[in-house]
Length: 243
Length: 340
Image (tube, rainbow over all chains, first blue to last red; front, side, top):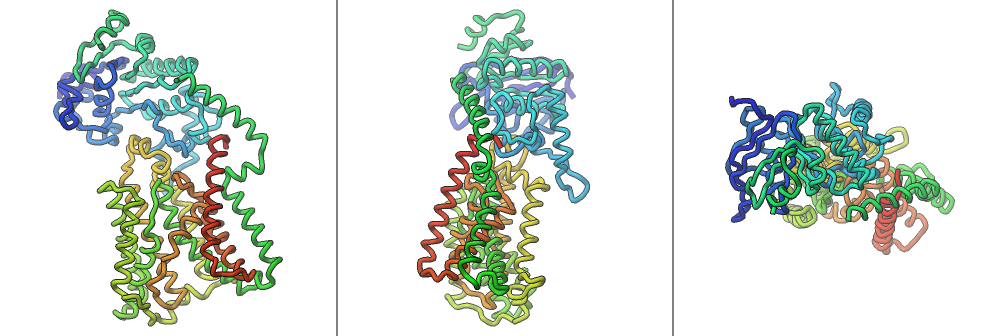
């Protein structure tokens, strides 16, 4: 057991694809209930680092500690079990499934009777979750491809946070949204922080980062450049670190 | 760029409002079962009026039997289409099952029950073989099952040398030829099978995950679902249903013909597509599969009753499939715009 100062710790992570070193000796610490902004130029290694957390990739070297305990995240299922959820840039919803089916995908509620799906119960819970998160979707039986971009993003976020995760990774959650929708998503993010969820926010939009984050983590060419307290830095400094 | 995207969303919802007003006719395009059910009713009326022998008990029995045979083939295809794949070897697996049944009854003298079990296992294995090639080696389902179509067909002809097995006991043909309550046993078996499909996709995790895989493989994978396993299983099930269709075919024909299954491929696609199993994956409907089977059989049956030159049958079938695919395209187009 290690000292339990952080919700999540990645230590000396290396990842290469063939001869290309995507991540070189990267260590990342995420405190309890903080919002950590993760920034970097294209190909800085942000996605790779996050995909190692979600189990989509495995690091070549390095260790991951979750609440002080070492974890081996070998696939997305393990990541979820540990308590890490990810919200993807392109929402990652199933367009052909309705709202409850998307919310509960991969962890459907089943009954005692031959483990049949409890669709009614999932519908009710979905309505409850949407209500609790103040997500504006009136008809929960609607299929995901009928929702607006903002609604889809809200649903994707709802899917990630509705099962009491400890850590939520958000990859460009506002990238494809209109201005009004961005505000809503930012509100949503701040509400999760109040609930004690630690959040890693990956985004190009420094405005958003400065609005919500506690610290900013800068990656460049696969290396950790610096970590700054948001209150003690400014955009210019971060941009200088990034490029 | 982001602003553009937002505009698109707005226009979509505006169009959706337009659509709701347009209503009935176009909603048929959105709800495939509604449209196709009406088409079936119209066909029934046309054929009843045009041919006095259409509504006879004999013809109804015959039509119902054909519908059932086709429905099993269509289920075998739909099970993999729904996950975003296809199975070009449905007919070949059916042929394997037919020949296996015939071989073990006729040559080995096994009891039909044992022969049937072996045939179903062969179907399962063939489906699993497809599934393993697709998921473990990573070959797309079109190429993989195109190859196994030849592999399996070759096995069928290698074993039989083209000759049918004809020593099938009369008792074995009861299921394929007799019936109860005015309809063939095959028809009731189909009802059970379609009920199973309905249950599978509405009340089982596997069905939900297979639908999800057809909708977005990536979203399903990151939701913690083992997508490869789901696809593999869908091919196993597809093989099983193709084998069931084959076994029932033997029961119906009273012999095991090696050529069985050669025309299944096109029929399976036609029915699945007409029945609302979108080619792109992610949707399936038990009612649609039933109605799709009825339509194909009615058209084949009706053409014969109407005395049309039946040597053109393949042409008619091809045209029907083109029509179905076109309707599918139109439906997808409106579905994209509509909000139902």
